Length: 306
Length: 273
Ligand SMILES: Nc1ncnc2c1ncn2[C@@H]1O[C@H](COP(=O)(O)OP(=O)(O)O)[C@@H](O)[C@H]1O
Ligand SMILES: [Mg+2]
Image (cartoon, rainbow over all chains, first blue to last red; front, side, top):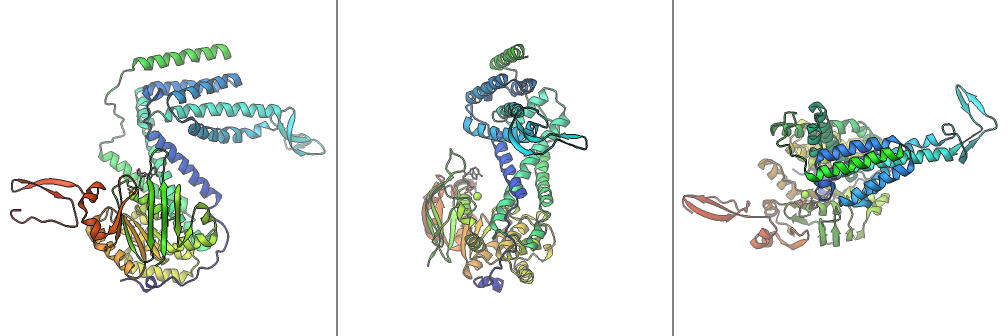
């Protein structure tokens, strides 16, 4: 029954790899993104600690987050954004969330989606002013197609200022989302939206996307580990490259199969696509109190800063 | 015999509140069959992942053939090649393990990756296909197979590179009795031809059949006892404490009667008992 090659010690000596490439950048980025999504979602699933925000009704939190996202986007004023950052920080502490860990994530996302994405806006091409980092110097100004290219290209003080302010806004918006996701289960958010008369079709899409992203991230991570177990050499060989060439498509397909099973098990347990509300809890005193304070603060911000 | 793995005071935790493993001291000699038993969540998979170099100890140290390894050891091409090619890991969830477009691709992936000529890879795949009765499935994608078929493909994918050490995580879970007995026989025969075998399981009948050395992980995530399979299987208190068996009461012929859920001592009642 056992083939003869398995009865001997391995004798074939492995060939040298044809090139020296490990997982390429895209693979590694996909893996890191997947790990990040998965931990965020797991955290979303297990927000069981008891603190200020955890004790409030999900509807109150959803309204709070939506209103304050608008507030954050209203103005660029730095003092104003800093006051809001302070408020969010206090809310994190009052909800007993480890500030170091959550702020590392927020800062990382704000750096990427705020700072890096908007950095080009700091160039003197877009924000004229005093250049503090010089990138290129030409002999003359030039015209290229419809563009006017100045003698010097660099980052200006005014531009950097602008990008810093945008990043701060992004930072605040992301903090708000984390305030919601780290204190409120996903199903609670969906129910709150339903009570707020958001149409079922939208909620259905939201729920299923959430499930699919979860499964897809899991598939990517699993595959990464399995590949690691059979990835002997930094060098990728031509034949195995060919086998793996369609792997993104394959991963989608495989996740889809799994997702199908999850969906079927939901249907088997009575899921019809309609979100049912067993009981509609009335808002409690503390919910009203929180809403009131948040509204007063909101109004004060509008009054003093606009 | 030299040790394949040597673990000293190994500890690991995934989150900063709960330990997944603590204070593990264990030596696995070449050619041995070792069973790691423990209830769900006792840390079996974590222990296997540590030995496979998929995660790295946070406390203590782990050595492979006398060479201590950590995450950075795998950056060295020679160690990485030697380690990955001599250790085969069959994941608990076959879905997690299979990533090639077809079953045949899955089987030849390892040998090709090692740089073997393509015809040798295919030759080996053919032999493995025959051994595992996978003839009908070679050009199908693995996600379309049943769980028993997937498990066989997963084992085959590991065997084609002929690793010295085979590590199985819960190889019996979710399989029908026929596939289970097929896999028990296969593990036993692989050990007969000299492979070092490590199996994590909570199926005591597998332990009984393999007559292996047994390590019991307790619900406190540490080694409770090590011994021969006979020694461990006769220690009822230990097995109850480690949540590997439980007492059931049921009735027949009107009398209530308690017995242990020792699946491998399959009990039949004829007439009165
Ligand atoms: N990826 C993970 N993240 C967080 N905790 C985990 C993870 N994997 C396992 N654990 C925890 O570690 C402990 C040991 O798990 P595991 O090694 O999978 O046990 P077993 O394989 O014996 O069922 C359990 O308490 C489990 O909840
Ligand atoms: Mg396990």
